[in-house]
Length: 375
Image 1 (tube, rainbow, N blue to C red):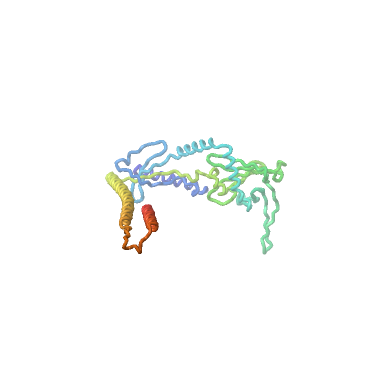
Image 2: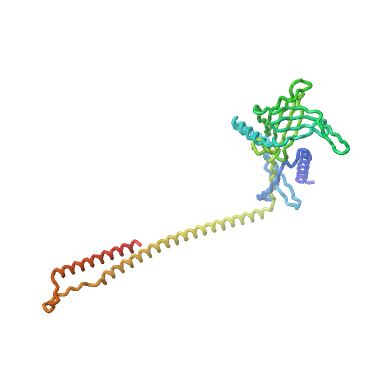
């Protein structure tokens, strides 16, 4: 068996082993690896040239069709350390106001839990059942079931309060464990403990769970009459600072197809030709835009010249009208026309009327000229 094939089988076995170990933890919620096929190709002449790094390893794998791939497998431990450093740096930048804002947002997101109580058993063979009622209490009780031949009846024979919600005095804190954050409340003043004589108390934890409904994922008695309950809900996941970010993060195995060198050279040549064609098309488009601008400017010039020509024609028409004005003829009266003789005053009066008519006509012609010019 060749070394690359052996390494491939070893990797496949390890991945399968990880999946089997996580069956009880919902493997769909914890993707560990993601294979990404890239468009970048590796020439055959360099397929055996590995570049060792501290954060990844490179190996050759074969597909079911015999296509070889050069795959880069990340170093999970190095990647995890990098993420931890980033989160530590982010935590240093977080202020008390930021933390309190996250807590307030989380408490508000939990409010709809008050609509229904959650009943559960710590395990399937326990005598006691439990009930969590949000912002009210955590209760332990036992149910006796009887059957009279017709109907099955249930009756509680014992009940103890493990903790009562403090009401307005409730103090909510945010805890950090690794990359996980969750909210914690202390509920006290439960039923008196038979062993200590003190009221029972319970620590209530609220965890983000993207892949489930509202449920109690854990219940333990950490010490005598002191309990711990974990309420898992997708509601908290709406607050990013309380969401399990690492669940969405998977380690990327990047694989590049290994192809003959001449194919890469051919693709490179085609790429250069396409780039040259694209540049030429862009230049032609720019030239077409420039030509269009020139045509638009020429159109504007033609419009202006047409307006000037029209105005010139109107002025010439006015001049012709002025030249075609009828002349006033004066006649000398002789003695032969004595019976029709006109006095000097009447002649002066007639001359004044003629001058007024001439002035009025000149005035009207000027107004017509100005009006046509402005139009």
